[in-house]
Length: 496
Image (cartoon, rainbow, N blue to C red; front, side):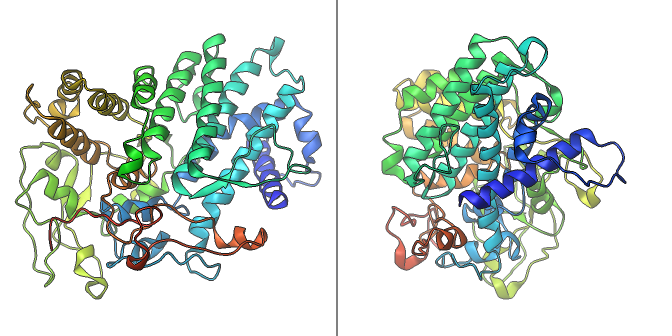
C-alpha cells in the first residue's frame, strides 16, 4: 500500500508543479525534481498545498467514483446505463456488489480509494515539513494558512473514507509509512479521526488572520473565519451522515451537531466550473439530456398522486403537478426516455434536473456548482433542534428557508408534531439539496433504514487493495445478505 500511494503522490506533485510553473506547452521535461527536492522548496510546498481542495473536488465529482452509483442506489436518480456501475448497483432486486478486480467497473471504486489516499499523502507531507520548521511566504505569512488548509483537506478526505467504506486506514502527518504498522479502522473511528483533523483546522483558523486565495477553492476567497465555518459545517455533515442505520442515527450527538452547524457556513461553497480545469463530471452525466433521470420517488414527494414507480408495462406518464414551485423551476419533463426497456421499466422516468445553468452540454457551459449549501447547514440545525426537543426553533428555521422561499409551500404549522417536522426536513433535503454534495441522498436514506432491501450500506475495501495486503476479499449487498449492518434490510416502497 505505501509504495503505491507514494507513486500516486509523486505523479500528482509533479503535475501540480508543472501546471503552476510552465507557460510553454512545448517544453520538454528532462530533469523532473525528486520528492526531496520538491519538499525542500517552500514555493513548491505552497503549490502542493494549493492543489489540495482542487484534488478533493475533482476526486469527489469524478465519474470514476462511487458518487453516481450511490445516487441511483438512493433512488434519487435513475439510469439503466452501465457507466460508473449504475445499472449493476441499482438493478432490482439488489444483487451483491462484485468486489473483484475483473469487474468491469472495478476502477470506479479502486480509483476513488487510491486517489483519496494520494491527496492525503500530499497534505501530510506538507504538514510534516512545516512541523519540521519550514516557513512559507514572506516572514512566514502563509505558513499557518497552509497548515489550516492541509488539516481541512486531511479532515475531508478521512471523512469521506469513513462515510463510503466499512473500514479504512487512518493516515495523518504523524504516521511513518516506512516503519509504522499500518492497520485498518472501522468507519466510526475513521470519522472521529476526520473530526479531529477538522478541529485542528478550526483551532489554527481562529488563532490566525489569513485569506485563502480565490483560485484555491474555485473562484472565491476564504478568510480564516470562513475556513473555520467550513470546517464546522463539514464536521456536522460527517457526524450526521456516518450512521449506517436508524439505530446508529439515534445515537448521534445532536448537541455537537447543532454547535457545529451554528458556527457553520453563511454562504454556499460553490466552485466555479470553467470546464478547463474545474469540471464536474457527476453533473455532466446526470443532467445531460437523454442520459440519467430523476427517480420517480422524488417526483412523488412533490405530487403524491403521481406514481412513485414507473408502470411495469411501460405506459407513458403525463407531467406531474405540485404546489411546490420547484417542480417547474428545478425539473424538466421530457417525453422521450432513452433507456432500455429490457433492463427494467423501473429505471424509467420523464424528469431531468434543470435548476442550474451549468450542465456541460458539449463541454461549453460554465457556472457555479453547489458543493455545500448554506441551506444544508441550516437543515442540520433544524434536525438537531428536533432531537434536542426544541420544535419551535426547528419550525422557525424550516419556514424561513427554501420550503417557503423557493418552494412557495405553506409554512409548517406551529403545532406540528416531531414526525411532521422531520418529514418536512427530509423533504427539503431531497428536493433542495438534490445533486449537491457527495452521496447526500444515499447517506440520508441509509441512516433512516430507507435504502431498498439488499442495497449495500457501505463499500468494502477494494479487491485490488485487499490482494496487495494479502487479505481475504469480501463484499456486501444482495437480498440474501440483508442484515441491517452492512446491507440494508429496510426500504421505502409503500407497496408495489
